[in-house]
Length: 111
Length: 113
Image 1: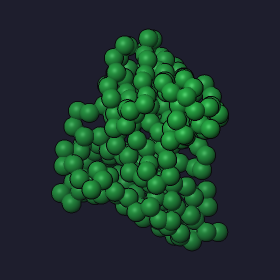
Image 2: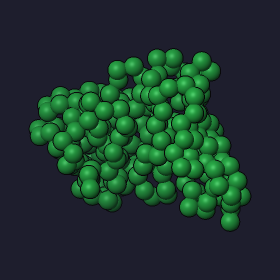
Image 3: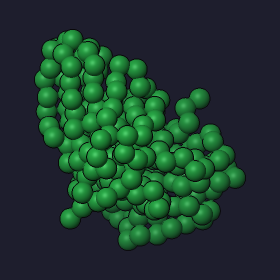
Image 4: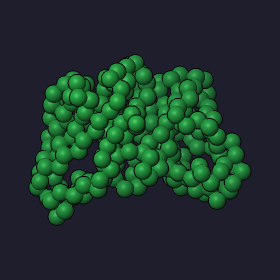
C-alpha cells in the first residue's frame, strides 16, 4: 500500500463548479499536510497547508483534514480553466524533514 | 523574490556519462532535497541534506550521490548515467524552523540516450 494515495483522475468539472480532490494516507504519525498545484511542464507550487482537523479556507480553496479517518481533501470553488493542473497531496510524518507525495490528480476545468 | 535555481532546464547525456545537476537557493535554508518525478509514480525522494556536508538517503538513492559543500548549493551526481534515469529532477529547499512546505526549483528534464 502506498503511503499517500490519490485518485489519478483525470477529473473533469465544468467552469464554475466545485472540484473535490481527495487524498488518503497510511501513517497515523503524519502531522502536516500540503497541497501543491503543478501545471504541465512546470514545478509544483504550494497552494495550501493544514495541520489541524477541520477546514482551512484561503480564497476559493478549502483544505479539509480528518486525522481519525486519515484523509485530507482540497475543494476548489468556482473552478476556472486556469485551475486545470495536477494537484499533489503531500505530508510530513512526525519530526521528519522530508515530505512524502502522492502521485497526483489531474484536474481539467471545462469552459 | 526568493529562489531555488537549477542550473539546466533540459539536459541530454549519453549512457555511462557522469552527470552533475546543480541546485542553488538564496533563502539561507538548512534543508535541501532532490526528487525525481515520473508519470504515474509521483515525486520520489532521492537524497536530502539538512546541513553542510550532511546527507541522508531517500527512497531511491541507488545510482546517485550528492554533495553539499556550501549551505546554498546541493548537487546531485549520477555516477554512470543509465537510460532508466531519464526523468524530471526537482530540487527543493525549506528552513528547519518552519513548516510551510518546500520551495521548488524549476526542474531539470534529463534524457539519457
